[in-house]
Amino acid sequence: MSDERKTIVITGASDGIGAAAARQLAGNGERVVLVGRSRNKTEAIAREIDAPFHIADYAELEQVRELAADLATTYPRIDVLANNAGGIFGDRKLTKDGFEQTFQVNHLAGFLLTNLLLENLIASNASVIQTSSVAAKRFSKFDIDDLQGEHNYSGRVAYGNAKLANILFTRELDRRVAEDGLSTAAFHPGVVATSFASSSGGLFGFIYTNPLTRRFMTTTEDGGSRLTFLATGTPGQDWISGEYYERDRPMASHRLSRDDQLARQLWERSAELVGLSG
Image 1: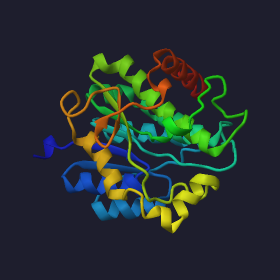
Image 2 (image 1 turned 120 degrees about the vertical axis):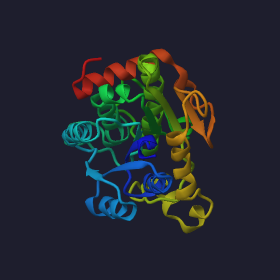
Image 3 (image 1 turned 30 degrees about the horizontal axis):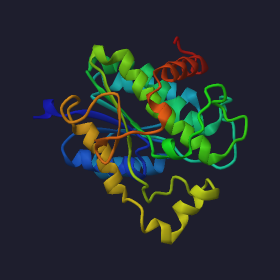
Image 4 (image 1 turned 90 degrees about the vertical axis):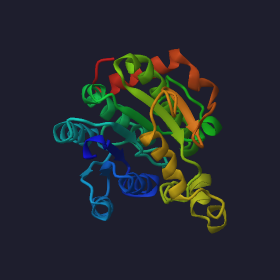
């Protein structure tokens, strides 16, 4: 029976839907590997579900490279990589790597991790799952020539752009490696009552910290179940590779989300920024 279990790596697993999905998957008997930024929070979840864990701050790409090396060495087979780490931020801020924080934490870091693990993932016939958001459709003003948000920055637009980038990355990854056996999907977990936007200020900060609005949000368990559905499902049978999902169903997102040329351009720009060949 143990040989039938999947090895599922979840980033952003120390809180919110990542932690909820980790609990659900571990409860189903899967091997769950946790990745988080906070050692205390990540270790607490790891103890709770008896799972291994790794620490990496996505605001530093060198930590992502170290994480990839650790994962590749420790887990020769990875059945699912869930790129769930992310966040909403307020004022425009550059990371240590010189990139706009929202873009790096929500897109670039996961893009880098996936590419560094790509050989292992293909060998495992793995699924790569991106936690996106309906914010891609509602707030994105995507400009391939302004990925760093240097012009007319707002935290809300930056987040929408990054979530659209998740969908475009999913689409282009599917185009490039589907024939090699890799499957991909992006999903919206719902407007989940977590603390991940509490420091962003503005509209998002208000929505996620106001007790009244939080009453109408999705629970972390329900949001986590959207990730669990994709992680445990069979591509081609339960879900379609390369697609974007809401409530476990393929849905339309931003009009640019199906722009194949834009998806290729984003891949090439992202690869150049993190020092990978396109």
